[in-house]
Image (cartoon, rainbow, N blue to C red; front, side):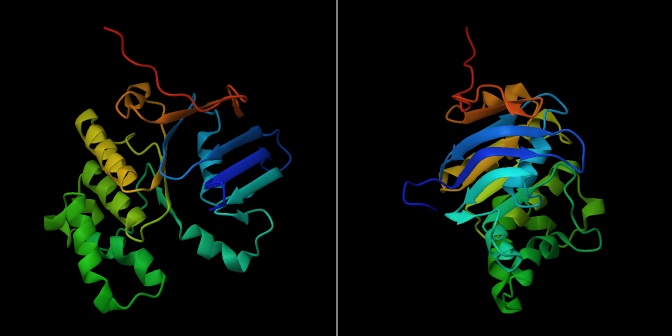
Length: 237
């Protein structure tokens, strides 16, 4: 994090795959710690591509990205895992490992980071209890509902206490009641100090987090580049 408190800064960022036209163009914005952001836009607007830049799965074709005070473009590959550990990711399709239990899926980031087995049990049990799955620790993904799988995915994303959580259409495969429960989990995490970025096409979700800010993508560009972050519209009576 830099002296002025920013967590991520994009400066004139563009992204293209191969020789195709840019899927993201001229993105300039700053994300600040402890805020809740929604990323919206029509299908094909570039939401997933922008998220990939945010969680360092993709490097831009041009422009500059600064993350946690580090130049994310020139950072050596050997330091990328260190940066990535500060970012939790929740995917729409869950991406759980099917032959592992809920407990082992959640414990995976800690094992990869080298934590001792004796140090895993308490934190993993606590986080599964936090998402309401204390009684499903031994269940494998195939035996869990869509909402339960997404909660396991959220637990896995936050078990290492990331500075930022990035979620790609996290409510796309669950019913409206479960979608609301998932958003409440994100809000709780945000109140604990984590920066949250949720990509969604569901405009109704935007109104459920009243203090959130919105980034709107339109064909790869922020729809209002001079002031892209806007509070969501209020319902009128």
